[in-house]
Amino acid sequence: MKSFSFKSTYDENQNIERIITERNRKLVKQQVIFAVLLALLLVLLCWYFFRKVLYTEFDGYVQTEYMDYRAMEDVYLFNQYTSVGDIVMPGDTLYSFLYVNLFGISDLESEPAVIVNDRNARLQVNVAYADANVLRVRIRELENQIEKEDNNIRFGVTDNSHKMDLQRRLAETREELNTVLRKAQLYSNVYRESNQAARRFGRYSIDFANTQLGLDEQLHELYARNSSAIRYAIAQDTAIVTKLWASPFSRVFKKEHVLQLEKLSFDNSNVQVVAYVPTSDMHHINNNTKAEIIVNDHVSFTAGVQLLGARTEELPEELRNSLSHNYTAVMVVFKPDPGQVLPLWAVVDRIPVKVRVNNFDNGRRNDGSDYWYIDQKGLTEESSYYLGLSRRQRGLHHYDPDAYAESPAPAAETAKPASESAAKPAEKPAEKPAEKPAEKPAEKPAEKKPAAESETKPASAPESGGETKNAETAAVKYVYHKIEKGETLYSLSKRYGVSIDDIVKHNPGTESKLLWGTTLKIPAAEQTDTPAESESRKD
Image (tube, one colour):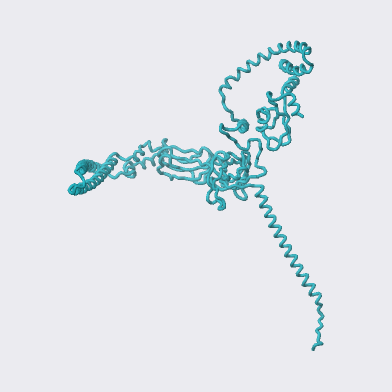
């Protein structure tokens, strides 16, 4: 048996190779699946961090104004010609009504004098008897105190003075009690008379008086024959009916709601987006920021900042973070950009939205218009300048009556000296060049010639306009400055001692934005500039 051996025709090497091949195939498949999952996870992480770095999102809501129709006076509403969801156009009839004061129906709201007198008399009787009970209790207390004083006097503890004072107070209280009882008796007699008069009048109620007078029948009769006393409420704008408060053929009192409309326009309904912005994220938003308002995955629109930080509010509980204890946020108001079309449901009041701001393209200009800066006196000089630019762009001008009254006078005065100055400067240049070369070097007359020419050129301006421009530019000294990052018109005006308007005047286009690396031509201040300094600055 030991020499027995089993010989098989199956090749074991082939079996081992097949097993190894299958294992390698499974291993490769697992590696491919793992690599795909890892790549997908990395893509999601990159996308998440990219969104966090590129965008900043804030919670907010849409705010719209509704148009409420209220009763100006007590009216009787006849019929409503609209229902909830109807779209009305300007001129459509909303409801018909009648002022009830025309028929004295409003008098039914006031109580008759007999009812008022009966209630007041009953009240006075109750008050008088309540006061009498209080006085009776006080009398009993005084009597008890007098008895104690008798014992103290008998044993020699006190003298008779305190007892006499208690007796005096007891007599006054008894007299006051008698007065209150007589008053209560008098009010009781008045109450019996007023009660009898009220019973003769009968039970008072609006329904009772209405039934007695038959006012319902009169109003329905007026409605049936379309009386001229009936008034009609007319729609003023295109709007949709959102709510009805009153029912047809019912009484509506003064200032009560009748119906509510929502205007179908961004401007007419004053659509705004209010965002909750934490103070730590205020650097992402400025006056020039454009934001994307996201209602859902399919509806979004763009809006610009309209009001930056006018008030603060506490975050709603559903928006609070348990890891943070700062629940106060700055309210930033956005105005939708014109030319957009949105479904009505996306701009209804209080609908929650997401406000997305691009951190790398948030409209920041770094020229002083990003925020309004104030000091103890008001707006700073730079903010006042850009406020003036925005007012001129919107067509807002401040009325100055003195400027408008005196504006024609300088125009008439400047016309005369222009003609007279044509002859006078012509004589002076002929005399000065002959005298000055003998006394002073030849360089100084060359410097004064442009000044003399600038005086004589206005007379011959129509013939040689180019020479006058050269004379004007020669009289003004400039400093050439290369704009660096972070510099603004305000900082340049403070650095060189000139106004922002002078810089903009000599550099058109800089009022909107400053480009880094460009060179500005800044007029130098006269009191601090010398020819040597201007030449060194130009170099």
